[in-house]
Image (cartoon, rainbow, N blue to C red):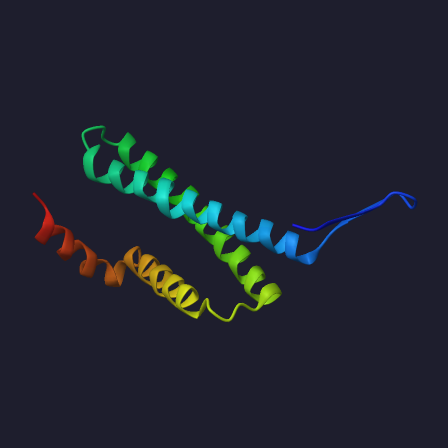
Length: 125
């Protein structure tokens, strides 16, 4: 982390590497909040809290919507970061992210929802 301070001129500046590192941390934190916390909580509410009819549905949709917003913010930071840094070894990371996001969007699309519903029926208790 490079921070340049010019005491005589009263100027302080951070290097581009410092802002890219902060952006990478923000990308990871926002994605973990979206994919790792909010979306799974929404899925668990849909799976185990249906006895709270109809409140479970609104709580589920709330968690899923906020989680989707976090994921979109993480994707945005990832796109900005990839344009700023141009990493050579992150093609796999980017490709997997695109594929996972594609299937997540496909899951909520009604014509293709049967693919995921039949999987849930096969694995249900």
